Image (cartoon, rainbow, N blue to C red):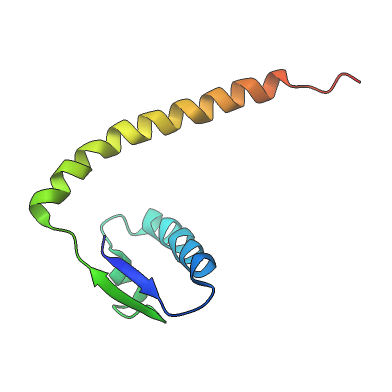
Length: 88
């Protein structure tokens, strides 16, 4: 995925909203890119970096490990949450 910089003062909120929209959009467009979703022109964003194909493979290999760790955290949280019932 390319890296973008926002020109707005609310860059964090805008970025979070765009990533949420992209995650939602990606479910019905699994082969689409961020640029496909935005129509090649995201409002107020400037593309500042593109991934290097030869290096991207290294990071792609980490996705499965990251997903596994994230799943464990979610499961552990769910288990702990089920035990923390207020008994007062």
